[in-house]
Amino acid sequence: MKERYYLVREDILPDAVLKTMQVKQLLEAGDAKTVHEGVELVGLSRSAFYKYKDGIHLIHQLERERIITISIDLEHESGMLSKVLGCVAEHGANVLTINQSIPLQGRANVVISVEISHLNLEPGDMMEGLKSISGVKRALIIGQG
Image (cartoon, rainbow, N blue to C red):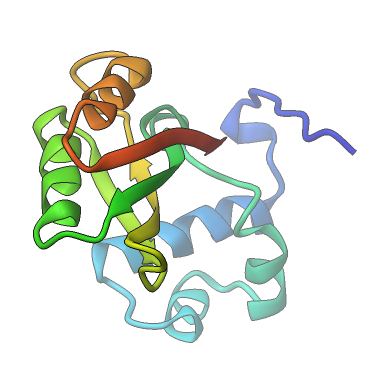
């Protein structure tokens, strides 16, 4: 089933959904250290929080969080990953995760998830920058979210 999104005015949302958002904001701000503490503060059950937590977000958060996943084949050479990460940072992207395989036959595969909401150019241009690094044998976007 394809996900569908709606823009809904806050005053028509059920209390449990609104309180879930309040708990998420308390946790993000550090005003609540645990989910248990947050739900106690707003008067919400933990089960309701877990039911709705992945389904409610502030609009500015959805606009901000653009993530791509990139697969890169690198020559097994000292400093290669550092060059790749430097290129990503230079273009205003933020690395979220890195998963690197053990080098086999002189090459290693690296999969990185990158937040691109502050990218100072198009993702395709950043990919071209990655491909131009000596020792990068292949770089392609394998996922977007």
